[in-house]
Amino acid sequence: MIKNVFNQKSKRKGQSAIEYLTTYGWAILAIVIAGAVIIAFMQGRCPKTQTLTPQDIQLTSWVYTATDAIDVRFTNLASDRITVQGIFLDTNGDGTYDDFGTNYSDSLNVGDSLTKSLSSIGTTSGCNKISIKIQYLLTGMNNPANATGTLQGKAP
Image 1 (cartoon, rainbow, N blue to C red):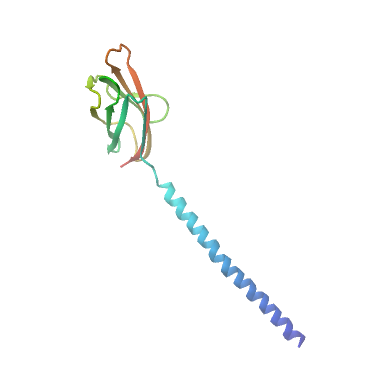
Image 2: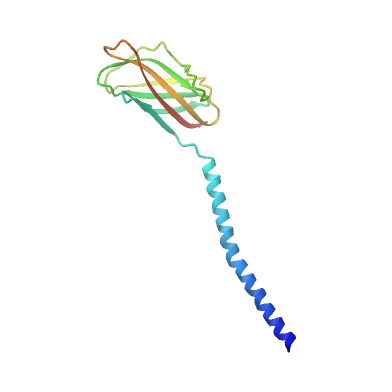
């Protein structure tokens, strides 16, 4: 009789432990799977962003046309006509801007837009962050001004 009671208590404890592990095991497994999916999804992201200051020139859009080539479109928001003199890019983040055309003399009236194609810029397939500097001259000014910013996106 004593042996029979001991076996019943032991079975109840074992059953309780298995129910506990089953219930919480599924919950823990679901949390681990959800975390892995979120991490995997976030690692492949490279949001396309663009900034440019001061606001005399607005970076309207930019797009990769190849792994190391982009088209950049900007608009004159200044109060007078501007002349774009050059576009410079820093593709490796070392603060050194490479010249991608200093012989420009494109004049833009207020509200006009201009698209420039830049090739062999040195980016790689995947996520790239590029610093951009546009040198321009406002009508009536002797010294050029610079609009600087960043482009970030995934190259094909």
